[in-house]
Amino acid sequence: MGLNDIKARIAKAEKKAGRAPGSAQLIAVSKVQPNERVEAVLEEGHRLFGENKVQEAAGKWPAFQERFPDARVHLIGPLQSNKARQAMQLFSAIHSLDRPKLATTLARLAQELGACPDLFVQVNTGEEEQKAGILPAEADAFIKEVRALDLPLKGLMCIPPVDETPSLHFALLAKIAERNGLEGLSMGMSSDFEQAIAFGATHVRVGSAIFGERDYG
Ligand SMILES: *Cc1c(COP(=O)(O)O)cnc(C)c1O
Image (cartoon, rainbow, N blue to C red; front, side, top):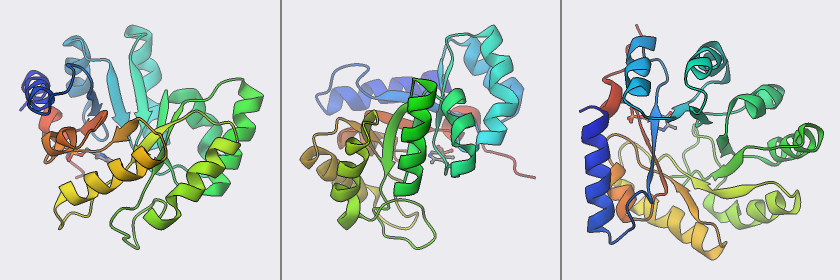
């Protein structure tokens, strides 16, 4: 447990997969964690974080970034169109692009603001009703649509169903990315990031294994 342990496990998984050191970036998922824990990880020198709610990130990251100006935050949770403008100003990447309406909103705001975070299309690889994301069968068409809007699309993201073997989902996501010429793969969490790296993850999203369990109390 802890930042250094996770970094060591990532390095080992990269090596085992024959990948270059640092080719899988660690997103430290700080949602719900007490500020002291986040601060400790910043003090240890880590600079890339993930949050799943715009409001929560807006409440804590501007203050951290005053002290750690090179800290970057990625949005890994669902984004409502009416929060898109705020999200584009807070986050350096958005991993949850999951519908045409959001894509057109982001494109309009990108024009207006003259900048856009890196984007990942979320794919609902398990075709779960309650989960966000484009269905695998619709992914190619949606990726084309996003590209036609001139948005900075970097890759794909998935959250495998909790009760299934994650590897099958990582393999599926990697396959969709490859046939669409996308390099970014945001996949793998505390329980399965090493497997995700074996399947080509470029961004692993690890929360509780770094910070400890989240207390939603
Ligand atoms: C919370 C969250 C994570 C991190 O989960 P852990 O199991 O704590 O590592 C990763 N990805 C997403 C989308 C999340 O919401």
